[in-house]
Amino acid sequence: MTVIPPFDVTEQFKTLQVDVNQAVAAVLASGQYINGPSVTAFAHAFGQYVGTDHCVVCNSGTDALYLALRALNIGPGDEVITPAFTFIATAEVISAVGATPVFVDISLDTFTLDCAKLGAAIGDRTRAIMPVHLFGQPADLDPLLALAHRYKLAVIEDCAQATGARWQGRQVGSIGQVGCFSFYPTKNLGGCGDGGAITTNDPDLAATMTMLREHGSRVKYHHEAIGINSRLDSVQAAILAIKLRYLEDWNQQRGQIAANYHHLLQSVEEIACPQGVTFGQSVWNQYTLRLTRATASGAERDRVQQLLRDMGVITAVYYPLPLHLQPVYQYLGYQPGALPASETAAHQVLSLPMFPELRLDQQEQVVDRLKQALVKTGLTAVRAGGAG
Ligand SMILES: *Cc1c(COP(=O)(O)O)cnc(C)c1O
Image (cartoon, rainbow, N blue to C red):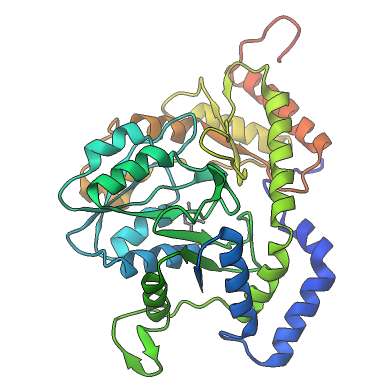
């Protein structure tokens, strides 16, 4: 049985192998492993790509978010609004700077912040809103920016899953005060290890983030703040600079794959396909659908996933437990039912294999087996003419 993986980072490497090996060898030979010229060059190229005046590169998407919050002086006593349905890093950094996350529900159509719920979450202590462009889909920024303007809140975009996504023609990461990116290998622009970047048009913020990233120092061995060590390796920068040239093509291929899935799945009533074009253009980091008949235990969805695995199709569940119900956030006092769309998503979502090199015949197999699994679990009524 040939296995269809959820992602495959080795395919990309094969096509870029000669260039990448050469670039890595050049960095290794130069001896400039930290903050070398490849780092400066990539930071410049990435800032230009996103369309901001400044780009500060760092060690991960998590650090990017952390540095942004620190540079905005957000800390103890402050609240930051963020969706309950996202990767832990988004909220973790709010806690790491000593502030308190305030979780808001999502829209089930887009998996991004439900802006109708945003107003009620804003209070005296709110300092920032951190929208997440989840799965590649830009969040609903119009009402969000209006509220941020009215209440003088910073907007920190979590672009970790959305490098290259557009909102009203503009790149995500160029719209709020700060955009935070991850170059984790499975992101749209993925390195061969960890990496991150922060984009902004504010020169002071950029300088502060650079200072914080270098142990709180602007002048070597003079420290004005408690910072961290968060640099992008020269080797990673050299690799990312090569990959950046292919990003638009890869995102387009992802778009084609999403369109194929839509087409293949449209006849299955019990599946809600992701839209991806609701607010701007998704870059399809994930193709995440909902099994609309799966119930609150998540058991049916898990069984579908297991059956698919048995048939050689590896899928993923992003995310099985929303953040407001995580053990680590119990102290905030959210009860089950508090954020119903996030909770529904958590037990209904399934992310199908998605990477630029995924072939149409593989997609057809994925969908075929998914339909079989739905019948076996009773999530699809068997209609005349088969299981479709
Ligand atoms: C991947 C990811 C991050 C963190 O990025 P790392 O580079 O892994 O630290 C943050 N937020 C979201 C939504 C992510 O998917």
